Image 1 (cartoon, rainbow, N blue to C red):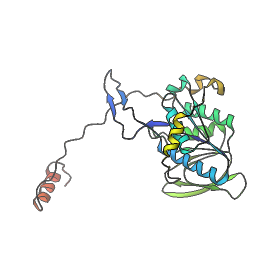
Image 2: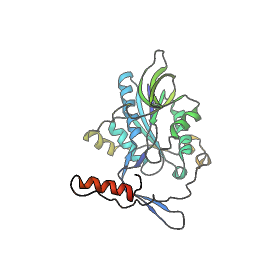
Image 3: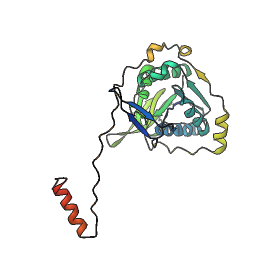
Image 4: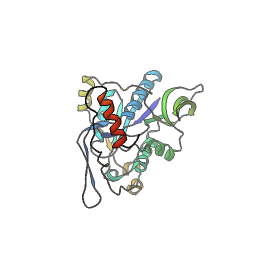
Length: 261
């Protein structure tokens, strides 16, 4: 089975994010700490498991400038057979639909049996790229997958997905796009040897022209108008002292200040 995994480099969830106000719009500043999006790592782990079970190969691909290459090195450290970076200046301002267009062109060229990716990226949580790739290709798409096994018929997979608090199992014809939910797999911790080998590896790149995608096709359709910091929280009041005085103080605060009693 030939599998392509879509990966994205995102800010570390623990990175400091600041909104710098000015000129009425605000500007987002993110600490320079980056990781591979968690759900993409889940997808990559299951792809490697399917390769081990069924044979074949796993290729990781990322579209975007700069730090995208780090996600590909991590995929190599995990054990991916190949990686490729779709790198083009036009992708710097692309939204999820544009990224999906670029990745779909690459997938069409590779002609895999299966495309795996995360259900959402942890930076914008838009959940657009996977469905966009499937739509451009005209392939079936199953979201929020928590289990993937061979189907009862040749050329199919059985995919169990979460749906409104329940689990639903479907049989999907290949080729298909499946996006991963937590529970599909537990991402491994790469070995030191794997990390060192990945750091030395040459990352192949391709631009939009080589994929036959005009730069205008990845232009953003959604524009961020402004950023605003969340409203500051009121100072926290603690009910101090020992029991039962602290309970009386808490009741007084809830009644007189919070006015919820």
